[in-house]
Amino acid sequence: MLRIASYNVRSMKDDVPALGRVVAAIRADVLCVQEAPRFLCWRRRRRRLAAFGGLSVAAGRRRGGVAVLTGPGVRVLHGEGRLLESFFPLERRAIAIAVVEADGWRLAVGSIHLDLDETARHRHADEAVRLLREVADRFGALPVLAGDINEQSGQPSWRHLAERLTDCYPVSPRGDGFTFPARGAHKRIDAIFAVEGLSVLSCGGVDADPADLVAATDHLPVVAELARPSPQADAPMDVGPGTAPAGSSGAGDHAGPARAEPGPGSSGETGRTEESGKPEDPEDPGNPGNPGNTG
Image (cartoon, rainbow, N blue to C red; front, side, top):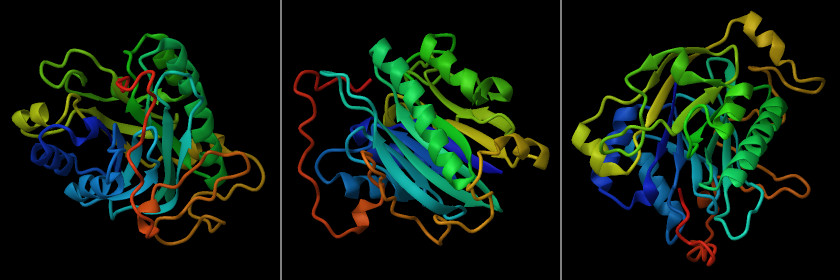
Protein backbone atom coordinates (compact mmCIF):
# COMPACT_ATOMS: atom_id res chain seq x y z
CA MET A 1 0.00 0.00 0.00
CA LEU A 2 1.22 3.50 -0.86
CA ARG A 3 0.05 6.82 0.56
CA ILE A 4 -0.25 9.39 -2.24
CA ALA A 5 -1.07 12.93 -1.15
CA SER A 6 -1.76 16.31 -2.73
CA TYR A 7 -1.29 19.65 -1.01
CA ASN A 8 -1.37 23.29 -2.14
CA VAL A 9 1.11 24.99 0.21
CA ARG A 10 0.62 28.60 -0.99
CA SER A 11 4.34 29.10 -1.56
CA MET A 12 5.01 28.62 2.17
CA LYS A 13 3.70 32.14 2.83
CA ASP A 14 1.76 31.25 5.94
CA ASP A 15 2.71 29.56 9.23
CA VAL A 16 5.69 27.45 8.20
CA PRO A 17 6.05 25.50 11.48
CA ALA A 18 2.34 24.58 11.25
CA LEU A 19 2.86 23.55 7.63
CA GLY A 20 5.75 21.36 8.69
CA ARG A 21 3.62 19.58 11.28
CA VAL A 22 0.89 18.95 8.71
CA VAL A 23 3.35 17.59 6.15
CA ALA A 24 4.74 15.27 8.82
CA ALA A 25 1.21 14.15 9.76
CA ILE A 26 0.41 13.27 6.15
CA ARG A 27 2.98 10.44 6.26
CA ALA A 28 3.14 10.39 2.49
CA ASP A 29 5.11 8.00 0.36
CA VAL A 30 4.56 10.45 -2.49
CA LEU A 31 3.44 14.06 -1.96
CA CYS A 32 2.28 16.16 -4.90
CA VAL A 33 2.73 19.85 -4.14
CA GLN A 34 1.09 22.85 -5.75
CA GLU A 35 2.24 26.45 -5.32
CA ALA A 36 5.64 25.12 -4.34
CA PRO A 37 8.19 27.91 -3.76
CA ARG A 38 9.40 29.27 -7.09
CA PHE A 39 11.06 32.58 -6.36
CA LEU A 40 14.29 33.39 -4.51
CA CYS A 41 16.02 30.32 -3.02
CA TRP A 42 13.26 28.10 -4.36
CA ARG A 43 15.37 24.93 -4.38
CA ARG A 44 16.40 25.38 -0.77
CA ARG A 45 12.84 26.10 0.32
CA ARG A 46 11.48 23.05 -1.48
CA ARG A 47 14.10 20.89 0.22
CA ARG A 48 13.02 22.34 3.56
CA LEU A 49 9.38 21.57 2.78
CA ALA A 50 10.28 17.99 1.85
CA ALA A 51 12.39 17.51 4.97
CA PHE A 52 9.38 18.17 7.20
CA GLY A 53 7.97 14.82 6.12
CA GLY A 54 11.26 12.94 5.73
CA LEU A 55 10.90 13.35 1.96
CA SER A 56 13.11 14.50 -0.90
CA VAL A 57 12.41 16.42 -4.08
CA ALA A 58 11.95 14.00 -6.98
CA ALA A 59 10.42 16.11 -9.75
CA GLY A 60 9.38 19.63 -10.67
CA ARG A 61 10.63 22.83 -12.19
CA ARG A 62 10.66 26.43 -11.01
CA ARG A 63 8.00 27.77 -13.36
CA GLY A 64 4.57 26.34 -12.77
CA GLY A 65 5.15 25.84 -9.05
CA VAL A 66 4.40 22.10 -8.93
CA ALA A 67 6.60 19.37 -7.48
CA VAL A 68 6.59 15.72 -6.47
CA LEU A 69 8.24 14.74 -3.19
CA THR A 70 9.03 11.14 -2.31
CA GLY A 71 9.78 9.20 0.86
CA PRO A 72 12.46 6.63 1.62
CA GLY A 73 10.03 3.75 1.09
CA VAL A 74 9.92 4.26 -2.67
CA ARG A 75 12.60 4.14 -5.32
CA VAL A 76 12.62 7.03 -7.79
CA LEU A 77 13.26 5.89 -11.35
CA HIS A 78 12.61 9.15 -13.15
CA GLY A 79 11.60 12.75 -12.49
CA GLU A 80 10.76 15.63 -14.79
CA GLY A 81 8.83 18.87 -15.12
CA ARG A 82 6.98 19.95 -18.27
CA LEU A 83 5.51 23.32 -19.09
CA LEU A 84 1.94 23.18 -20.35
CA GLU A 85 0.48 25.20 -23.21
CA SER A 86 0.86 28.95 -22.79
CA PHE A 87 -2.24 31.15 -22.48
CA PHE A 88 -1.00 34.73 -22.40
CA PRO A 89 -1.33 36.67 -20.12
CA LEU A 90 -2.23 33.87 -17.70
CA GLU A 91 0.39 32.36 -15.42
CA ARG A 92 2.37 29.54 -17.03
CA ARG A 93 1.25 26.13 -15.80
CA ALA A 94 3.25 22.90 -15.59
CA ILE A 95 3.13 19.25 -14.60
CA ALA A 96 5.72 17.51 -12.42
CA ILE A 97 6.01 13.74 -12.92
CA ALA A 98 7.91 11.19 -10.86
CA VAL A 99 8.09 7.47 -11.66
CA VAL A 100 8.43 5.50 -8.44
CA GLU A 101 8.75 1.84 -7.61
CA ALA A 102 7.87 -0.02 -4.42
CA ASP A 103 7.53 -3.76 -3.80
CA GLY A 104 7.90 -4.50 -7.51
CA TRP A 105 5.17 -2.19 -8.84
CA ARG A 106 5.52 1.19 -10.47
CA LEU A 107 3.52 4.39 -10.44
CA ALA A 108 3.92 7.49 -12.57
CA VAL A 109 2.65 10.25 -10.30
CA GLY A 110 1.85 13.71 -11.68
CA SER A 111 1.25 16.97 -9.82
CA ILE A 112 -0.81 19.72 -11.46
CA HIS A 113 -2.32 23.08 -10.59
CA LEU A 114 -4.98 24.05 -13.10
CA ASP A 115 -5.89 27.64 -13.94
CA LEU A 116 -8.82 29.77 -12.85
CA ASP A 117 -9.57 30.38 -16.52
CA GLU A 118 -11.98 27.71 -17.82
CA THR A 119 -10.50 27.40 -21.31
CA ALA A 120 -6.94 27.05 -20.07
CA ARG A 121 -8.03 24.71 -17.31
CA HIS A 122 -9.72 22.29 -19.71
CA ARG A 123 -6.85 22.30 -22.21
CA HIS A 124 -4.30 21.74 -19.47
CA ALA A 125 -6.33 18.89 -17.96
CA ASP A 126 -6.24 17.09 -21.29
CA GLU A 127 -2.55 17.85 -21.86
CA ALA A 128 -1.60 16.70 -18.36
CA VAL A 129 -3.25 13.31 -18.78
CA ARG A 130 -1.58 12.83 -22.15
CA LEU A 131 1.90 13.71 -20.84
CA LEU A 132 1.44 11.56 -17.74
CA ARG A 133 0.36 8.55 -19.81
CA GLU A 134 3.34 9.00 -22.13
CA VAL A 135 5.74 8.78 -19.19
CA ALA A 136 3.79 5.93 -17.59
CA ASP A 137 3.87 3.96 -20.83
CA ARG A 138 7.60 4.51 -21.21
CA PHE A 139 8.33 3.04 -17.78
CA GLY A 140 5.61 0.41 -17.61
CA ALA A 141 4.01 2.32 -14.74
CA LEU A 142 0.45 2.98 -13.58
CA PRO A 143 -0.56 6.66 -13.82
CA VAL A 144 -1.81 8.69 -10.85
CA LEU A 145 -2.62 12.39 -11.17
CA ALA A 146 -3.06 14.70 -8.19
CA GLY A 147 -3.53 18.39 -7.73
CA ASP A 148 -5.49 21.57 -7.31
CA ILE A 149 -8.14 21.37 -10.05
CA ASN A 150 -9.64 24.80 -9.29
CA GLU A 151 -13.15 23.52 -9.94
CA GLN A 152 -15.46 20.95 -8.38
CA SER A 153 -16.64 17.53 -9.47
CA GLY A 154 -19.27 17.68 -12.19
CA GLN A 155 -17.64 20.63 -13.93
CA PRO A 156 -16.04 20.17 -17.37
CA SER A 157 -12.34 19.79 -16.54
CA TRP A 158 -13.04 17.56 -13.55
CA ARG A 159 -15.33 15.35 -15.68
CA HIS A 160 -12.63 15.20 -18.35
CA LEU A 161 -10.13 13.88 -15.81
CA ALA A 162 -12.62 11.50 -14.19
CA GLU A 163 -13.49 9.99 -17.58
CA ARG A 164 -9.85 9.03 -18.10
CA LEU A 165 -8.77 8.23 -14.55
CA THR A 166 -10.75 7.29 -11.45
CA ASP A 167 -11.58 10.01 -8.93
CA CYS A 168 -10.37 8.25 -5.76
CA TYR A 169 -12.55 10.00 -3.17
CA PRO A 170 -15.97 8.65 -4.25
CA VAL A 171 -14.55 5.11 -4.40
CA SER A 172 -13.59 4.95 -0.72
CA PRO A 173 -14.32 8.30 0.97
CA ARG A 174 -12.88 9.32 4.32
CA GLY A 175 -14.39 12.44 5.84
CA ASP A 176 -16.38 15.06 3.93
CA GLY A 177 -13.69 15.50 1.26
CA PHE A 178 -13.77 19.30 1.30
CA THR A 179 -10.38 20.95 0.72
CA PHE A 180 -11.03 24.69 0.30
CA PRO A 181 -10.82 27.09 1.98
CA ALA A 182 -8.90 25.60 4.89
CA ARG A 183 -10.94 27.66 7.33
CA GLY A 184 -14.52 26.46 6.89
CA ALA A 185 -13.85 24.20 3.90
CA HIS A 186 -16.95 23.65 1.77
CA LYS A 187 -15.51 22.89 -1.70
CA ARG A 188 -13.67 19.83 -3.02
CA ILE A 189 -11.29 21.35 -5.55
CA ASP A 190 -8.22 19.19 -4.80
CA ALA A 191 -8.21 15.55 -5.85
CA ILE A 192 -6.30 12.40 -6.65
CA PHE A 193 -7.11 10.43 -9.81
CA ALA A 194 -5.77 6.90 -10.37
CA VAL A 195 -5.83 4.52 -13.28
CA GLU A 196 -8.64 1.97 -13.21
CA GLY A 197 -7.40 -1.24 -11.62
CA LEU A 198 -5.56 0.33 -8.69
CA SER A 199 -7.34 -0.49 -5.43
CA VAL A 200 -8.38 2.64 -3.54
CA LEU A 201 -8.40 1.71 0.15
CA SER A 202 -9.32 5.19 1.33
CA CYS A 203 -9.23 8.81 0.20
CA GLY A 204 -9.83 11.99 2.16
CA GLY A 205 -8.30 14.33 4.70
CA VAL A 206 -5.42 13.93 7.11
CA ASP A 207 -5.42 13.44 10.86
CA ALA A 208 -3.64 16.64 11.91
CA ASP A 209 -4.21 19.39 14.47
CA PRO A 210 -7.14 21.49 13.12
CA ALA A 211 -5.34 24.67 14.21
CA ASP A 212 -2.29 23.67 12.16
CA LEU A 213 -4.44 22.86 9.13
CA VAL A 214 -5.96 26.35 9.21
CA ALA A 215 -2.67 28.13 9.85
CA ALA A 216 -0.50 26.21 7.35
CA THR A 217 -2.06 27.31 4.05
CA ASP A 218 -5.44 28.05 2.45
CA HIS A 219 -6.05 24.46 1.24
CA LEU A 220 -6.46 21.18 3.08
CA PRO A 221 -4.41 18.16 1.96
CA VAL A 222 -5.97 15.09 0.42
CA VAL A 223 -4.50 11.60 0.90
CA ALA A 224 -5.27 8.39 -1.00
CA GLU A 225 -4.15 4.96 0.12
CA LEU A 226 -3.63 2.86 -2.99
CA ALA A 227 -2.99 -0.88 -3.12
CA ARG A 228 -1.17 -2.93 -5.70
CA PRO A 229 -3.44 -4.13 -8.49
CA SER A 230 -4.07 -7.78 -9.16
CA PRO A 231 -2.34 -9.40 -12.16
CA GLN A 232 -5.69 -9.31 -13.95
CA ALA A 233 -5.85 -5.55 -13.44
CA ASP A 234 -2.34 -5.17 -14.79
CA ALA A 235 -3.20 -6.82 -18.10
CA PRO A 236 -5.11 -3.92 -19.75
CA MET A 237 -2.13 -1.64 -19.11
CA ASP A 238 -0.21 -3.20 -22.03
CA VAL A 239 1.29 -0.15 -23.70
CA GLY A 240 2.84 -1.76 -26.72
CA PRO A 241 6.25 -3.14 -27.69
CA GLY A 242 9.37 -1.84 -26.02
CA THR A 243 7.81 -1.02 -22.65
CA ALA A 244 9.49 -2.54 -19.61
CA PRO A 245 6.99 -4.17 -17.28
CA ALA A 246 6.94 -3.19 -13.62
CA GLY A 247 9.84 -4.75 -11.77
CA SER A 248 11.98 -5.32 -14.87
CA SER A 249 15.22 -3.57 -15.69
CA GLY A 250 15.12 -0.88 -18.33
CA ALA A 251 16.75 2.32 -19.43
CA GLY A 252 15.39 4.23 -16.46
CA ASP A 253 15.79 1.46 -13.91
CA HIS A 254 18.55 2.54 -11.58
CA ALA A 255 18.93 3.25 -7.92
CA GLY A 256 18.00 6.62 -6.51
CA PRO A 257 16.35 9.70 -8.03
CA ALA A 258 17.10 10.12 -11.70
CA ARG A 259 17.71 13.17 -13.81
CA ALA A 260 15.39 13.21 -16.82
CA GLU A 261 16.75 14.03 -20.23
CA PRO A 262 14.10 16.03 -22.11
CA GLY A 263 13.37 14.80 -25.58
CA PRO A 264 13.53 16.84 -28.77
CA GLY A 265 11.37 19.90 -28.53
CA SER A 266 10.51 19.15 -24.90
CA SER A 267 10.34 21.83 -22.26
CA GLY A 268 11.14 19.16 -19.68
CA GLU A 269 13.29 19.91 -16.68
CA THR A 270 14.12 17.55 -13.88
CA GLY A 271 13.12 18.15 -10.32
CA ARG A 272 16.52 17.41 -8.79
CA THR A 273 18.46 20.30 -10.29
CA GLU A 274 19.20 21.45 -6.75
CA GLU A 275 21.93 18.78 -6.70
CA SER A 276 23.68 20.24 -9.73
CA GLY A 277 25.77 22.79 -7.84
CA LYS A 278 24.37 25.66 -9.90
CA PRO A 279 23.57 28.94 -8.11
CA GLU A 280 19.98 29.72 -7.24
CA ASP A 281 17.92 31.08 -10.11
CA PRO A 282 16.97 34.76 -9.85
CA GLU A 283 13.42 35.54 -8.89
CA ASP A 284 10.98 34.43 -11.57
CA PRO A 285 9.66 37.59 -13.24
CA GLY A 286 6.34 35.85 -13.83
CA ASN A 287 3.79 37.31 -16.23
CA PRO A 288 3.43 41.06 -15.75
CA GLY A 289 -0.02 40.89 -17.30
CA ASN A 290 -1.39 38.71 -14.50
CA PRO A 291 1.13 38.30 -11.67
CA GLY A 292 -1.35 37.19 -9.05
CA ASN A 293 -3.27 34.52 -10.93
CA THR A 294 -2.11 31.53 -8.92
CA GLY A 295 -5.51 30.02 -8.22
